[in-house]
Image (cartoon, rainbow, N blue to C red; front, side):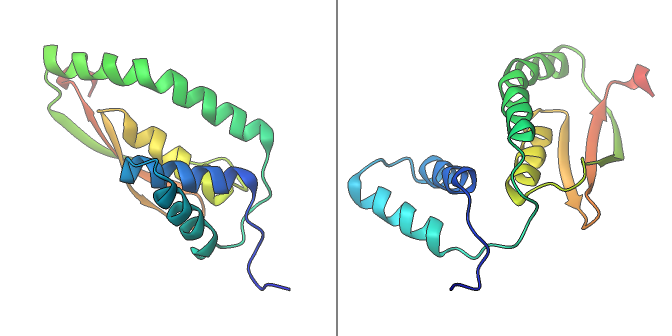
Length: 134
């Protein structure tokens, strides 16, 4: 028996996806290295996978792409000069993979970036806004 927590199929897929995006190589050797790294990297115990949460996050990823383009054009056409740091509460009992995807979604759009995440599930987010929204 291993003392490591189980690594779910979604976590394996997410780790492999990140590996392939970082390396940009789909050769057999790189696939073998990616699988080995995925299985050997340490993992921590987290909440069980909630398929409904994963579906929601994947839907948000698809919707974040046009939002990122819209925000980029807004920043070009109307400079955003006001900065603020806000705190966003994550839904409770998130697995490590879902926390990663939440942070990715916040950081993916040009107007926001996650600065910190604490153990209670609060994200510290840096936001830029146009002057009129203050």
